[in-house]
Length: 404
Image (cartoon, rainbow, N blue to C red; front, side, top):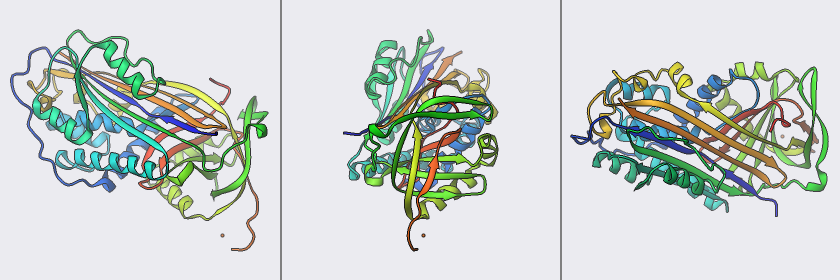
């Protein structure tokens, strides 16, 4: 049976303190959830982070939703200017009192939507106490709003949790812990389903994919004729390929020209992407002659520099970082590294994807429907999103399918 297997990120926050906790965190009152605002903010963050990561050449893939979730939990422990910078960079439109319950509501909505469509979507969070402890108030926020599992352990425990929650797709997220590490915050999202209109393996064949106007590679193309929603704009075409039950879908944004990806990325903003997806959503389905390359890629990113450019400064500064919401004193702890790894494979059975992030804090139409040809045989953007909430779970670009 053709199936879709989608695994999202394991987010890891390693926290280290130079001194034991001497006080409790300032508890943030929990207010009503406003998932609409959090979706807008998360998607805006997805676009901005994409633009930061797009500076590097080649294929690109990451999970903005998982990173947002992890930094949401980190934000729960931030105070003063450190909190303001994280809030701005992550496009959180809600304050401490509303944001965490909003994540709780959105997670619940995403899981329920997938379940109703017959799909499997699991979202897991964890707080691993490595060589110390955090305040009870911080634990309560993570447990009550993110359903965080709270347990003690070291490097093997952390990597084991990530491997389990991502069904083995991310086998190892950290190679070492800071000697003063106190805790690790984890997030993992797992999705498994099938295409609504399945590809048949007998229809797959080898053909050229134009990496650029002067370079081609031979890759395996999947093919089917079926009904999909199509959007045609001046500089690109888009197709929405739904998974069973139409709860989630993969959206392909294909430039009109072989070398048109750079122009499309320049046009990519939070507003333009929202408008494109809304237009695509409103389109009626039509018969499409669809060609999509099979591809598999793994990516890895150091996110300290991108987040620094996006305005998070104090959190990386020993002198200015303020994470009193986790306990301790201002200046006791700061972020030393943020790592993100991702994996995606697209084939006849569907999509398999995984992402992992490590954030270490250390001490110190009418009439007949024509057949529309959509041939993704040159670089394109792609998004995996929840259709009900419009939440972007994954985002990337495919430049060279032969680049494993």
